[in-house]
Length: 453
Image (cartoon, rainbow, N blue to C red; front, side, top):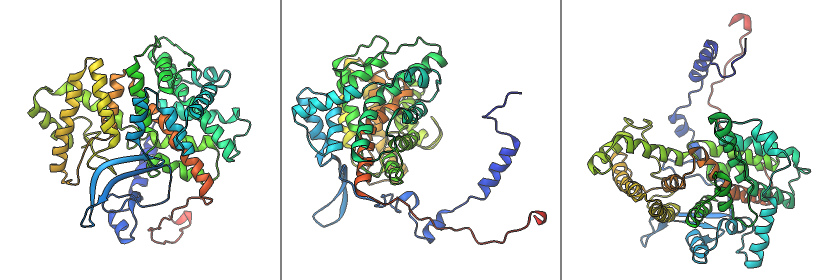
C-alpha cells in the first residue's frame, strides 16, 4: 500500500487535541508577567528591539501641546523620502528599482556612471546555473510559488564555491546575485506549475540585458513577451514601494534574527521567504483581490447602500472568508495614510484608464471610503483607518494581468533588496546572537515512572 504523507490519522487527531489542551497561555498571563505579546504593547505599538539606518517610518508626531498624534505617513529609504525618490526617477523617465537597490545597500544616490555600472553588474548576474531550470524547477514542479522560491534559494547553495563565507564582500556578491535571480526563479517556477499542474504550454524565455527588472519580469512571464511602457513603469514603482519597510516587519526581523546566528545567506533568505509567505504578512494583496472578486459577484457595485451593507457583513464574519477582515484596510503603523498606497493609487488610476477598467478603480475608491467609516464605527478605532499598500497593489497586479500565484513572489522579488541590506547591517554592526527571553509559566511537577502512569 502506498503511504499517504498528508493523511491525518485518528491517532494524530487525538495527539493534536492533547497538544491543544496542554498549550494554553492566557492573555492574563502576559499581563501578570509584563510580557509584550508579539513584541507589541497594549496599544499595538511595536517594542523597540534594534536600530537601523536602512529605512524610517513616520506615522506620528508631536503637536504644539507636546502630545503625540497621528500624522500622514512618511517612509524614508536611507533618509530619502520615497515620494521624492519616486518623483525623481519618474520625472526623468527612468526605471527606479535598480537605483533603489543601490540606495538601500550603499546608502548613497548613484550618479549616472555608478548606476550604469551597477545595472551592468545586475545584468551579468541575471542568469541561473547551467541546467538549474531543468533540474531544480522543471523536474520538481510545485503548486506554491513561495515554496518553489524558497527551495530554489536553498538549492543554489551547492553551486556557490564560498557559501558560508560571511565577509562583507562575499555576502554582498551573494545578495546581488539573488536580487538578480529572483524574477527568474519565481516566474520559471510559475511556468512549471502551469505546465505540469494545469496542462498549459510551457515557455521559458531568457531575460534581456538592456531591460530593467520590471521589464524583464513582464517579458519572461507573458507568452508573447510584450508589455506597454506604462505597465512596466507601474510595476517598477510597485517594486520600489515594496523594497523595504523598516526593520520591524516580520520578514526583515527574521532576517536579523537568523543572520545573527552566523548562518549563510541562502538560509537567511529562505527563512525570510518563509515569513513573507504567511497571509498575515505577504499574502494580504491576494486576499484583497479575492475579496473584490467576491464583492463583484454578490453585490450590485453601483448600489452604494448595498455595498455598505455587504462590507458590514464581511466585518461581522458573515461574508467572504468570514475572517471579519476588510483586507487592505488599516496598518500596524500607519493610521491616517500609507504613503505607498497613496502613490500606487495614482498609478492604479492611470493603468485602469489604459485598460478601460475605470469602473473597477472607482469601486476600490468607494470601498476604501466606506470601509474607513465602517471600521471606525464598528471597531471603535478613532486613530484613523486608511488603505494600506496591499489595497492598491492588489488592483495594480490585477490590471497587469498577473496571476494570483505570483502576487507574493513579486513582493519577495522586491523585498529581497531590503532583506539584503538588513543582513549586511546585522553582520557589520551587531556581533551578538539575537536571543529574546521567554518566561516559563508551567508549574513544576514530579516525574512519574511509566508503570505508574
